Length: 369
Image (cartoon, rainbow, N blue to C red; front, top):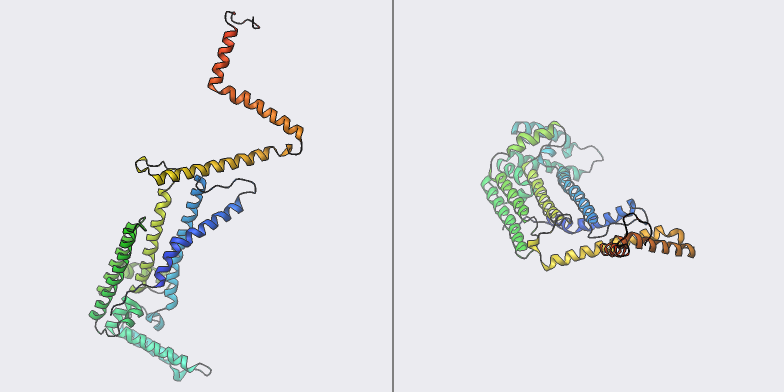
């Protein structure tokens, strides 16, 4: 029976991308406003251009940080779990002669009969048995082929497989089942109206990883970018041991899923930019309600700013009623002279009145007679 390789480790990042990161962005934005905006100064209100711009920048920073963390995490876990070549202390392209020499040294060092006093015999025996099983896998061409491409889990899941063809057939069936389920879930979600943003990138990620997985499973050689570029680079710089094809496939799966999620969440951040004019051809009831909500938020923010400014400017007059009365009178006089007089209708009315009073009076005459 063929199992589908989908685990909680593949589903947990989805919930982090979709729900936890936006929630954390709101907390971080509120915290940053509390730290960097002085008490009494107005804070950007939800729906305003500044608020949306700040939220977009915070989300992008968190998305990039989590994307880098996911790649580091999967690579760290792969190094911690080790593999047959690292346990035996041999390179990934070791031949039978070099492996035999190396195993003789390991036997001298780790054989249970040669363990020093105080060493746990059971643990020493278990480790030596583990070394023997790793050696047998590397010496067996079929198991080595499967181990390099599918990892220890792939070899363990196909216990009845003997030849390379058996391992390849089993791996192809697992891959078709896994990617078929993923594509079916994506298609059903899109048909129901979910996850439409970035749907293209999700399908592209699944297709790209499927091609890499099938190519790695069915070809006798390792991918050229791995054997010619990546492994020589990491080994020459002593960054980590050389990668095996199944490790690269695991990293590619994690990276492609994370990249598709990142691009799918990045598109709405720029599509819903409040600085861009709305498309009149797509005007709908929902869009109009959103515009009204943004206008109301902007008006409320403006009212709050004006109220705080007036309170700040009138602080010296709070305890002095006489000064407050004089301030009110001065503001009234200012409004009449500088605001009302600037109105077009008021200026026209004043001009017509003055013109009627001075009808027939020579230019430059003083007085009204």
